[in-house]
Image (cartoon, rainbow, N blue to C red; front, side):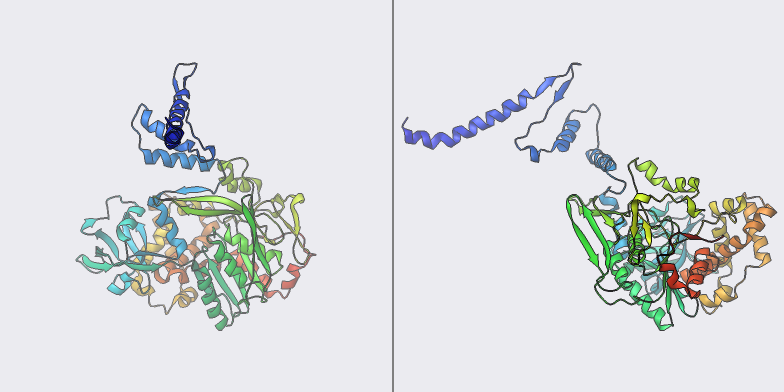
Amino acid sequence: MSNNNFKVYLPFLFAIVLALGILLGLNLNFGKTPAGTTEKKFFSIGFDRYDKLGDIVNYIMESYVDSLNREKLTQETIVNLLRNLDPHSSYIPASAFRQMNDPLMGSFEGIGIEFNMMTDTVVVINPVPGGPSESIGIRAGDRIVKVEGEPIAGVNMNTQDVVNKLKGPKGTKVTVGVQRRGVDELLEFTITRDKIPSYSLDIAYMIDDVTGYIKLGQFSATTHQEFRSAMERLKRHGMEQLILDFRGNGGGFLEASIQLADELLQPQSLIVYTDGLNRPKTQAYARRNGLFETQPLVILIDEWSASASEIVAGAVQDHDRGVIIGRRSFGKGLVQEQVQLGDGSALRLTVARYYTPSGRSIQRPYDNGREEYYTDFMQRMLDGELEHPDSIRNNDSLRFKTTAGRTVYGGGGITPDIFIPLVTEERTPYFIQAANRGLIYRFAFDHADNNREQLTRFDDAADYRENFRVSDQLLREFIDFAAQNGVKYNETEFMGARTLISTQIKAYIGRNIFGNEGFFPVLNQHDNAITKALEVLHSGRFISYLTPQKETAESIEP
């Protein structure tokens, strides 16, 4: 063979040798373990591209003794993998992805009702204003008993299954059968589904002549616009000072918290920064002239305030911009990056930590595992932290200074400037039994449902708040109702909780007739944190709460 001919065949020879080498390598990596079982060791030329998990799953599917569901096996593997990282990295199956993201995106598609399941029946609390149900004639108090001719009442259908039947893509139609009080026959409505707004702002109203109150339930894509609209409306009504309620707010979009903080802080003020091993340090600053940068501000937090709400509270506290009132917040300061996978599922992976302007890490420790992390609330109760400010375990090695020189602490969560204990005295055993069984809500709902015409004679929610009274007769009816449902009357325990029970009955009746406008303002009249916030704002000493001399948390009696 000539030299030239050899050169022609050389690439083919190299290919054959390479293929033989790979096959030989695979065969050499099968062996016998001491117990005599076959062990398969996978081979890869590029170790940086080696898919060990994929190979293991493939091997299990090919060789396991019993049949397996590959998708289920893969999902469980991913979930267990992420569980070993931190408490907030998570896997979202494709089936749950849209359901989990709709609220944060600020809308979903459906028929537009707020409802509750009462004795296995869908009861409309309120049709969404301007939504498809309201426009076609669905009313508060209606019972939806059929969907597309199939019963959904009395068949033990869970709430999520009901939601799945009523929700659907915009433009599709669904026919529902409705029972209406005072109408003998079943009413039938065909509703064209549409995009339904989902609001993150629970309520905004004037709590007195000069004090506005805004409660945010979460931080979503629409939060900033909702907040601005509410602020502009309250300012037109004479707002000079603000109570911003983040209690129970578990967070949401980082960008929404930055935008909201920008309305409260002077331009160029640092709001938050993030830092992670594989992510560069990023800083977010106030950039524009906000709607409320100088007027007196109080922010309310509690042990369920987390993430985005802690970012705003921490920035306001570090810049001595407002007074933080309540109890130490949850302590979620991990940044999740969401990646949607090819099958419609998604991965939320922690990539960085949040830090307040003074350098405090918001995240509380999770070194002892997820179980201890998520039972921290119970540990706080056992330690007395929810009732006594002295029980808050601040770490002196994690002391930081605000802009004005006040001492604040890191180590997890935001510690308030003024501590409000969790009120336990009114939560007597009688109240706890009635509340845990849902009896206060059910009684209030039945009363609202049976007296809807009379209650709607109030001009509006404000008229209801001022003029509706929970009478002694109504309380006696509640006592009888509770007894019929297994809660035995105890006079001492009932009288200890009487004010709380009366307030909740009135609030729930108000919600069933007027929505949140009839609910939160009623509860707020019997709320120690709001009472203290108003005291701070009206004391004439607001600035004194933001001076370096005030080093320790203040407490009030419940």
